[in-house]
Length: 151
Image 1 (cartoon, rainbow, N blue to C red):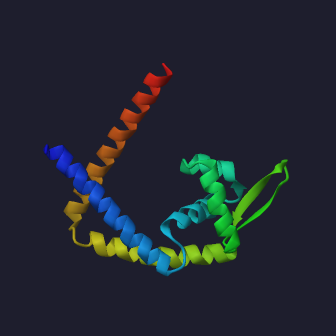
Image 2: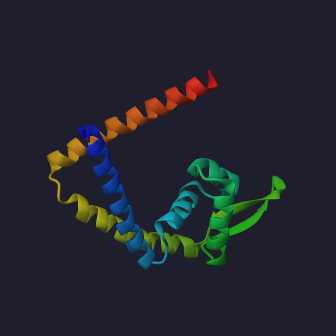
């Protein structure tokens, strides 16, 4: 296997392991990582339509509707009629949802601290630089591919 393939496999493995560990920890506090994405989005941007959430998170509208149904059932979000469009609903996070999100955020932060504490400051700086470079490269490739498809 080529070195870049080995590194990418290790990155995927790390991502999945960290994701699983954080999800387990957050779920113990009452909100999974997946559900926290919706709650976090609503807490930062405020009330919005489910189509706005789907666009922002790049999820299928049906996926968002199902997630909101569950969050609403658990009283973490609420739907109200959109005054600008009576066919649409505005989704907002409830106080219960805010408390759940805050409670789940602490163990997430603690786990990330514990994981990354194995690196010294120089290693963290290097990792930050490398990851930033790769993120920019991925964005460049994606943008180029979109332009090629449209052009």
